[in-house]
Length: 160
Image (cartoon, rainbow, N blue to C red; front, side):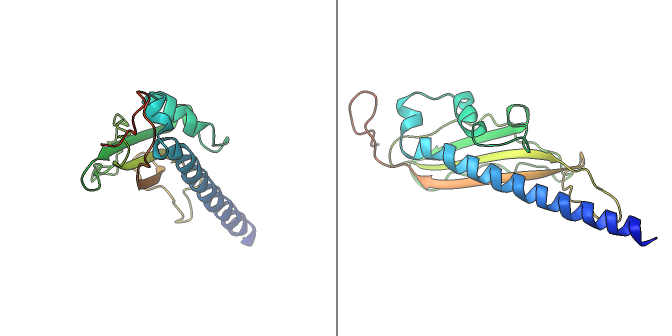
């Protein structure tokens, strides 16, 4: 009688750890990829959203199906911090499309957001890490920063 409860507890602890590990991987990958925007490399090399996503995906492991599941939003502003809409609706469905791609120029304030719907396996004994309507957990990594001055492809400073 205690055995199933103990196994359930062990699996719940294991899944909690895996979700936290996947979340940390997404944070690290987003930070590493965002450095390409921060330093102007993405802008001077004319990165597309897909190339930026590939740079992000190069820093994750098998816990995240990056190619098929990660949505990326990048938005910039020359005055104030740009805002991104909520990634979910009231029912817990993901509404973000990952279509925003504006890395900005030197001196721009940029917000980079990566979203991933992590599959939750254990949903018994009252333990449920899912926070979406489809039974998955939404992992979100968001960074806000001001682009550094950099030399633009045309030879200028890239400053606004």
